[in-house]
Image 1 (cartoon, helix red, strand yellow):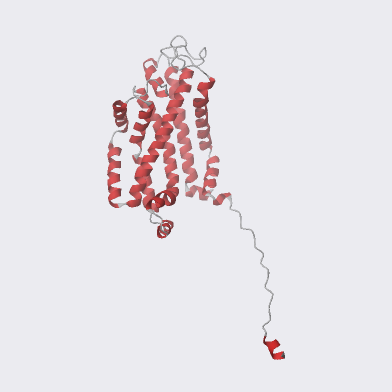
Image 2 (cartoon, rainbow, N blue to C red; image 1 turned 60 degrees about the vertical axis):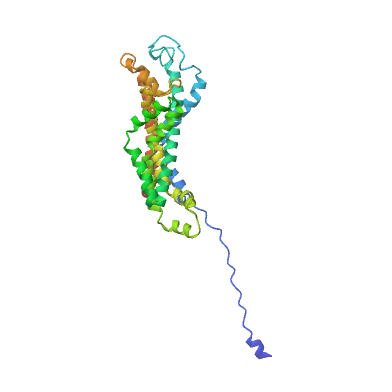
Amino acid sequence: MSALVAAEPAVRPQPVRSEAAPPMPSPAANPGLAALRLFLRNPSGLLGSLILIGLLFAALAGPHLYGVDPFEIVGAPFQPPGGDPVLGTDYLGQDILAALLQGGRATLLVGFSAALLTVVIGVTFGALAGFFGGRVDAALMKVTEFFQVLPTLLFAMVLVTLFGQRIAITTIAIGIVSWPPTARLTRAEFLRLRGLDFVKAARAAGAGPFYLIGRVILPNAAPPIVVSATLAIGTAVLFEGALSFLGLGDPNVMSWGLMIGQNRAYALEAWWTVLLPGAAIFLAVLGVSLVGDAVNDAVNPRLRKRS
């Protein structure tokens, strides 16, 4: 009996392990929050954001707050600023302030819409070319090169002349002539990322090609594409201004380029009719450029590490 008791192994009490709560992720561990923090610390980005917010507010709320038809003749032609109307009149006696507020809608609408179309076409071509490679890449890049060698403004003028001078046609024309740089940028990112381990792991797990393109590679290729899209807005604004200046915009919709084109013959004697819409275009492009540079700094991994 004593031998049996001696043979029984002693049961040692196991130490109680307290389960600690999982650590909360720090904001710096989130690339999106880190990029946002860098953007908010960039004075140029904040200045550009304020400019764009001010222009958007003026374009959206201004026509409601200042309810004057921009095509209505409200006084004698070439009334200088400082009277009534406050910013003067143009060569027909139309209100300059009403034209600026209403024209901002068309110009900014075309700018943002054409930039969106540019990104959609460019990302589609670049993603397919960079992911599949081979003959698909060669064929899509030939199409890209064809559009890239065309004179962009002249091609846009031809499209608007053929299909009509309307806001929608102008937007489509600008998007069609502006997408090749975005396609090449997207292709380069996909060529760089498609051979990395996380893509190979997703492919080995059974992910299909379009899942890999849209859910695996594209989110990691997004930062430079976002920067390109931001700068494309400024390019589209300039394109719209150039087409309207040349008389190829929608004559029934007021825009900043149309204001400059209609009053260009009187620029020396009635400087405000050209200077004010030109300053509006300048501010829009400046704001977009400042925001684009700030976004580029914020999504740059090297700058993020230094912060």
